[in-house]
Structure formats: C-alpha cells, structure tokens
Image (cartoon, rainbow, N blue to C red; front, side, top):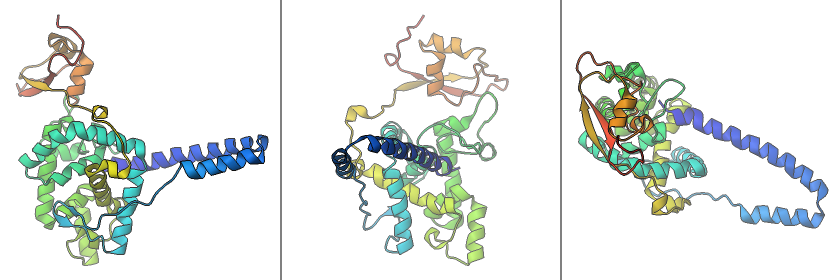
Length: 320
C-alpha cells in the first residue's frame, strides 16, 4: 500500500544524486577559470546562504491517543529520520500542505462518521500524498487499496467503474479495515502498521518474537518499521507547517470546488455529451469523478450512482 515509501524517497535521492554529480563537475570546471579570491567568496557564500538545521523533536506526542515512547533512543531516532526526510523534501511537503487544505475538510468528517480517530487522515497522506494515484503494485486511490482488498470489502472495480477512486466509499472501506485490525490487536498504532504489512504479517512477527501487542516493541520489515513514523512526521509537520519552515499565504492553498450530486441509474452511452449538458467538459467531469474509468457506463443492473457536478462559475464552458 505504501507507495511513497517505496518510490518517492528513492526517486528524490536519485534526482539529488544526479544533480550533485553535475554540480561538482560544473563547479570543477568553473574553479579552473576563476581567481582564488572569487573561489573563496563562492565557498563563503555556499556556507552562509545554505544551511541545514537539526529539527526540534516534540517532548511528547501520540497517535490516535496512544503515546509514542520518544524517550527510547531507537524510537527517537526513527521519528527523527522521517521528520528530517519529509521536512527537507520541501517541494513535496508544500504540495501536501496545499492539498491538505483542500481535502482534510472532506476527510475529517468522514473519519468521524465512520468511527476512526482524526489522526488517520495522516495515513492517507503517507499512502498517496492526498492524490488519486496508483502504486507500482496496483494499489489505488487516496487509501491505496489493492483491487482484491477493495472487492473483498464491497467496492465495484471493473473496466467502467473503480470505486477505490471514490473518496467517500474508499474512506468507508479504510475505516472498516482499520477497525477490524484494531479489534484484532487492541491498538490503533498496530492497526496502522497492519494497513501497510497486513494483519497476518504483523501477527506473525508478534508471535515469532513473543512480543506484546505494541508496535514500538516489535521488529518489523524496514518499510513497516518506518511507516508509522512517517505518519507521525506528517502529523507533526502539518499541525504546524511554519514551525518547520513552510511559508505560504492563504491564497496559495488549494480550495475545494463546490459540487452537487446527480443520480444516475441507467446506462450512459457518452459521458462527454453527459458533461456537456451541465456546461462542463469531459475532463472536468473526470476530475470530480475519477472513479468513472471509461467514456461510457454499462449499467444493466440499474445500480444507483451519484455523479458530482461542479457548481456554475468555476469553469468557463457555457451550457448549450
């Protein structure tokens, strides 16, 4: 499920490595052509104009009301690692802050409705970066469900509809999955870990190690060992972005476009024509309904779907 941990960090390190090599090569060429005085000034500028700071670690913190034992050395180091990585990946962090302004007001009431602690919105950040994307393993949507898991929990997934991309339905399924894990382990923190490694994978390691039902006391694979700390890092940063160096104005943040729902219980032969009736393009229709996977809908069963249409005034296409 954890796309960011598998792909994002490796990609950014690869890019940084490439940039560093090019920078060294270019700098070496420049040095040969410049006087010692110029080189000295450049070195001084590099030191004074670019600084990386160690970050303050909270004295206490919790996940879903469960304390994090930051007094333990390995726990403190693991949290520090994720806090540093996600603070100094500045472009990704700022994009997530902008998206959070758009999507947290939608996700938060759904978490409350479906019985999940508010902190699980940060799990969605760790999974997808608050984007309807897919991982190399095929996990999709904000909550990164595999198709097999989605179908197991009642989501429709086929060539025409993929409800993993329906934020409300996918959040409901995520809540059901996580609550079952909580019942199994007695811990929201272990439920979050099991979202990454699977209930069986976590249970197996607890049994093998004769450990307590405590995420912080179990040795897990590298990805799952980092997973909860990544969630905690996002919680820390997004709860106080400016403390961690993210500067922005209110108008810089992304806003949700208001929509209303249209019920459809028949086949739709042409979604571009359908969209045109509401004064929007097919592209705009798909932006607001990413779970629609084709330009038409087969609906022989007469199932009810609710398609979101943006309110007038947000897009320029006139109604015919």
